[in-house]
Image 1 (cartoon, rainbow, N blue to C red):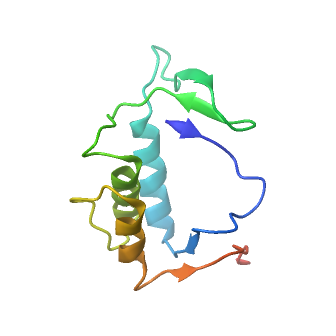
Image 2: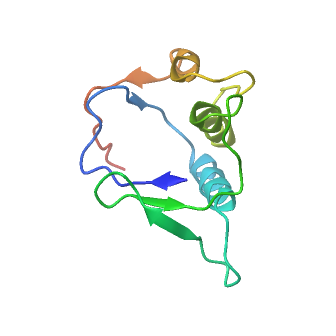
Length: 114
């Protein structure tokens, strides 16, 4: 699994979605469970990623032509409580089409004050 921090909000292909605190907690647990752990229960860092400060971690899932990063993203959105279905998802536009009814495309994400 490639993990990376973004120095700023993405300028394109970004959507604002609202998720409950419970949804964020479920998503956090799900993401942690997607990472393979060593004997000490720590995520297994396996290589530097292709971007500055990015890292590859060993994961529990698989990646193939029928289960892509887009399938995984749809699964994650569903876990967070959003009405997204991962069945048959291969391409990014299949995920974004499901986001359209409730998400706002945003070229510049902004932080919402609490």
